Length: 232
Image (tube, rainbow, N blue to C red; front, side, top):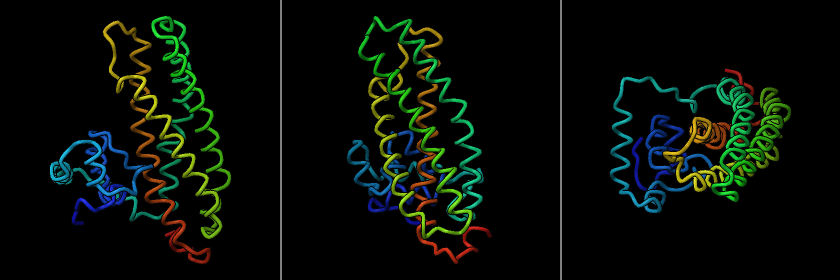
């Protein structure tokens, strides 16, 4: 694949998963913003497109075997999403909410508005993501497993809107935490919260990328009779 400034950042991530390391390094949104051209994203971030392309090429010049989910069966991708993202989220989201409330209680007086907003955002994000995953598992994914991709347009549209909303919360959390820069006076709980939220953002970016840029387009491109695409 020849990467140019006009190439969509989500398309690059779909074809070359290792490129997401570079995008994360520069805080480039390759999931919800995956439809944008690489050159436009680089311009907004104030980095040279040629340098980013060079970084991507360096990442690709490795012996690490990358999983090309765009080439895998859709059912296998769904199973991967459930195991690699849904299961860990159900454990991690309550932990982060508890940490956020503890930090609010212990350090809220330092900046009441900021720490209250962080706690509220984490709590709302937990509720939204848990509901989001439930809808995927009970409505969207069963449709795909049954080969009824032609009925999935409505559920997918809802999922993508919710992905955008989650992305907005992540951006707000990053701004409130000064890019997760841990202050010197931070206690271990505070440090754990910042570290956990940073890791959550990275995981969700990968999670949303796999759905928005790979899973959803493939499902929408299939007819219900095209069973092979789903099960091979």
